[in-house]
Length: 116
Image (cartoon, rainbow, N blue to C red; front, side):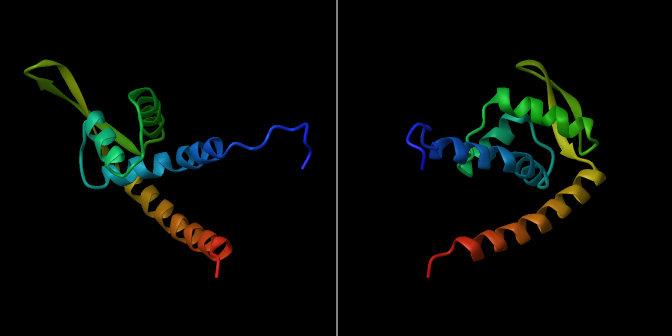
């Protein structure tokens, strides 16, 4: 190891791993049905994936623009209308493909990193 190079920070690597899986997890949460963004955040937090609105909304927009999500507006008695997101048929298909890939990757990672 070159002593002039700063050591790799484990927190940076952990954050990158989480970011890479976040879209998959959002689609997985929405597989259960239509949700309001704060409900999505709550489900992700329950799973120990801490996400803030500033991270979630751009991802929802990107997934919507890709045709994987759709949304509808619902009037609210306590404020402005709310946007509820759900998977499209393409989103369901995409999620199934991601799940298969995740299973393969998870198996490969477990085989190469497990200690006997």
